[in-house]
Amino acid sequence: MWGGRFSVKPAELMQAINVSIGFDRRLAPQDLAGSRAHAAMLAAVGVISAADEAAIQGGLDAIEAEIRGGAFPYRDEFEDIHMNIEARLRELIGPAAGRLHTARSRNDQVALDVRLWVREACDRTVLQLAALQRALLAQAEAHADAVMPGFTHLQPAQPVTFGHHLMAYVEMFGRDAGRFTDARTRMNESPLGAAALAGSPFPIDRRRTAAELGFDRPTANSMDSVAARDFALEALAAAAICATHLSRLAEEIVIWTTPQFGFIKLSDAFTTGSSIMPQKRNPDAAELVRAKAGRISGALTALMMVMKGLPLTYSKDMQEDKLPLFEAFDALDLALAAMAGMAADLTPDRARMAEAAASGFSTATDLADWLVRALDLPFREAHHITGAVVKQAEALGLDLPSMPLAEMQAIEPRITADVYEVLTPEASVASRTSYGGAAPAQVRAQVQLWKDRLK
Image (tube, rainbow, N blue to C red):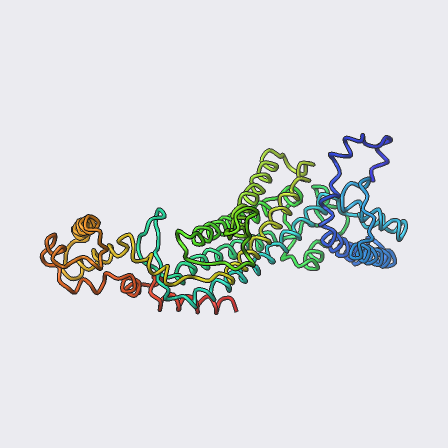
């Protein structure tokens, strides 16, 4: 493609480090879409003839058919997807193919292709997140009143419900969807027509190609157009945050399925066995989702390191932007699908969760709140009294609902039998009626709100 300046082929080692067709062939659909829009625009503004445009469009259609049919001749000698398609176009239609590259460069071409690919990845991820949220909503609605322990520091803190716990992840994944949507909005500008870095002397219509490719507008600065990869970094940042949320839920599934917790069960569909221990049922799907977070966060770091020292505008370093993107979104696609499958598959053990919710003096805060309401004590004083009651209950080997009234009155004489109305996990959960609280009615209201949003 640059034979006019060079007389000797690249060294074999140079070819090995330079070639990218092994991975950027995934951009073929985007490259074809950009070429179609560019050819139509060039013909519309009179830069190429209608006959040449027709030949180019026909050749691009033939190439697309070859790619779809697995017959396209990818060749390392042509280095990347752009030159492979252009070379094949020349073989199919002859000299007219050479007119397609008028008023563009591989710099704006690849910037366009990657932007189109990332935009599609963001759209796909938002749909996957919605599917995961729906699976969680179904479980949350069915178990809005299933009492379980809520934890801080992985220690029993206060009773909540299984539905309330799952709704926390619905909120997290909702924000993840928002981040992908926001990133998509910002990236939805077309760099096509920026050419190598300075724009084009031809009378091109960048607004036309932008509209044809579904962009809101063309990018405003030709140098930024080819140099920028922050749209990819932003998408990877959203992916890394999303993967972190997936990993947290995966970790909880791993914990909940242990015999020590026994809060949920996964079916054979999402567990594996052991080659030596016949009793094992391993939550491998959750563990692998947990591991994907490292790969996805690593992809973000990798691309940030590629970009951090690059002067404007394009450097060949930026060829390395694609593998982190492809690998991260491949991993995220799989992790989201697996988590949606597990969310629909899991079966909670309501009795076991309720039993655990009653342990660890989980209603101690309810006792303190009762002292504030019933005895008009300052909360700090109520906190101190409750701590003393918990200490005595622990010494007696009792939980709070089983504490004799006399034992509590020895610490605070004004405590009455009415206190027992707030000391069960069920009573604790039912009392949490503030907006966003754990009360079943609040959980069901939030479930309905999200179901309406996701319609």
